[in-house]
Length: 417
Image (cartoon, one colour):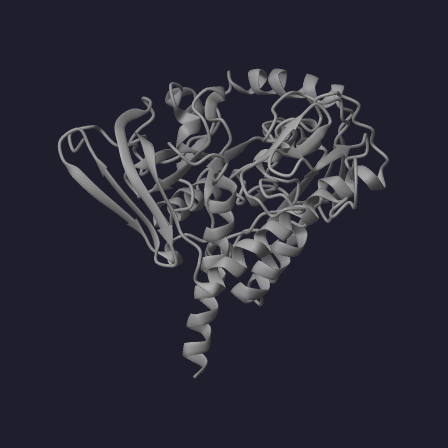
């Protein structure tokens, strides 16, 4: 493994090659026209590149809408390393800047700074670092405000609506949904001089708030596809009726518990209705946040613990995944510990609680591989597939976020004393 060439994160980004621009437009505009995209622009008059474009992240459609939103200008895009697999030349020449998810890499700031100051380009960043799991905004890193402060460039937020509804991460079949976006300059270059990092983060977090199911209800958007609830159990993994975990399932327009038999119907406006008995959560994100609270209480009571064998795949570069066999993964209030083997020798990867504010997870990755999480160092990314436990990756994602918040509060209280 030591001899395998690693991805070059030090290579400077380039402007999109002129011959790729028509292709990008051709791939983007028919889709956004078909979905009747409407973009509301606020405080954008007279703004020219360079600037930082922070985008919400719900589906692959996001990239096509971003292309339309900045038309006719082009941008450099922060792209996770798996986006370069088998097409590194293409992605780099389309303006891509490589990044490993949920790592603190000073090289990224250097690359963004180069794109802004030397290329005079827009830099598009999707700071949620994964598609929305349940149609609501995800946790953002505190380092985002620090980066903005260092770069000294205007900040624009592109908050997109309808993308999750049209293709949720737990079921990639397309739904017929029209889309809209709000494009707002939230911080001018002049304002940056007087704003503190916490104030910058507060502005960004406020601009990133969204709730796809509320947006659907407010706009009375009907989703009539018969499979509209299939896969939802991947996110809503715990039954609110009997409290059993990982026994939820879904089919057609229903989600149900295989342990107690409780069933819920998803209507055409995205609301849940129990087929018998009370409806604990009609608004789907409320069920999701209830699960988060359940995990938090486990952590606070000292009972939270995860342990399983995992299939390990390594992604050191853009050439593809390398199978490293089966290892052991544990997660507790101390963080992650991965025991595995490279092609030559055993290794241990430890990720402390404060090293991860969030976790990237996938449902049935690439359509065949199964659910996974990934853990990254600056030199490699390990894709980990639980062998024995089913439908657990959403809970792991909650645990990572809540452990981080709790540990961060503990540190604050120590400092204040």
